[in-house]
Image (cartoon, rainbow, N blue to C red):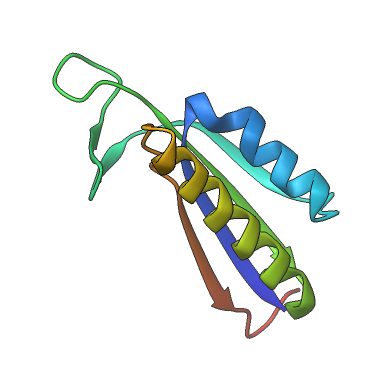
Length: 99
């Protein structure tokens, strides 16, 4: 089993939710209005760091991960090619225990 965290700009909510549907992921936890600082700059929801992130955390069987990560990579590439900046990150880690 894997834990997948997807951190993304709130403006990309629809695209990320579509990726989950296409990967047949039904169970997840979503956090809205997440602030912080990363490689794409500050997202503080104010004039100093405009914008807000959302985070989705899900636990999936190992076989689902390639579908998710390839779809997220495609989304980032398409966004970059069209002149946008998909400040989206996907972190995959192994789950030792799920109780």
